[in-house]
Image (cartoon, rainbow, N blue to C red; front, side, top):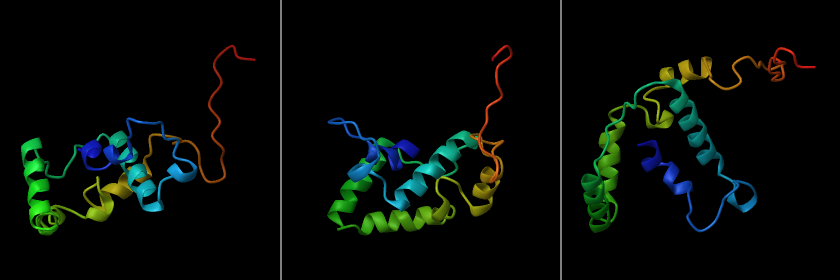
Length: 123
């Protein structure tokens, strides 16, 4: 769902994007991408309603035929399931809990650089 709802928009078959310069993400896109990585590493189940491919195609067609009204109605119904501000998390508390226990750089604090533990026998 995360790929289908957001990440596929960042992909291109024609060339490689490095997300720098003209390919850099807008701040809002970067925030969503960061939340997606945090969510995927949180181990939480995806809580939002999902659309099957036929229903997604039907919604797209309905959106085209109603000049966006079908999409707005669907978005309104989806918003009733949780706080869309924190998608893919369901709520601010879920997002906050994931931020309190990050998977990456969990030992690095504000005044502490990331220093991996050296392997035994390393010089």
